[in-house]
Image (cartoon, rainbow, N blue to C red; front, side, top):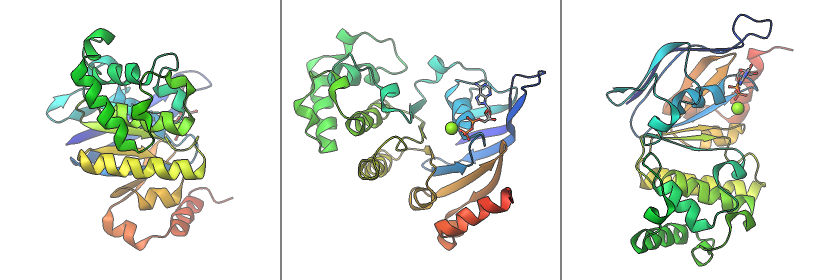
Length: 254
Ligand SMILES: Nc1ncnc2c1ncn2[C@@H]1O[C@H](COP(=O)(O)OP(=O)(O)O)[C@@H](O)[C@H]1O
Ligand SMILES: [Mg+2]
């Protein structure tokens, strides 16, 4: 179980630029849940993920993963628990390193990292198998610099890298938003497969109403730093993406 209790985050506190990004947010995430998160720009979606990863420490509130209170843990210390894929494929991978070097670093997430340690023959065959699973022929390009691959290929590898080491929660921040529709769809299929195979607990931010309802088992709708709707299986089954858009329009009547 992962619990966020009464989380508050403000930026530029005490200045004219003060912004409340999370306003007393409480969410309980059951093991194996796959939650999609939607909300207008500035709703606090990325901040919510950053609070989970430890990139932002909350001003108030508590984060508990399993039995452990991780509220004050820095990102490095949480790396063995939380894995993340960004919107920009370039952010999650190192372009100058080869495909297998990127995988090797990812395989030691949360531990001390040296490439030599992670690039043994046993790991190489694990990486080859993982890449073959993507169906992109990348298992034959393990020595190529990852910078030579397309955005979609890099994002597929980022996703694979995120789940290579054991983890408690996978965090996806609009990880298909920078891709063309076809590539985005294939990354969503891969996401579904990995999450189901590895029984991962997942939080996925998306701008697509359709994706929000199609993917996962529960949907949070955020607005101005708060979770306004928490839609479970039954509620989602009754909603179309048009209905979801309608809920948005109610928030900010023009
Ligand atoms: N590093 C930052 N410095 C100042 N304000 C920030 C920072 N990050 C986010 N914000 C503000 O916090 C609010 C929530 O942002 P964010 O979580 O990025 O929203 P979303 O991902 O839903 O678009 C916004 O008002 C945004 O401008
Ligand atoms: Mg964001």
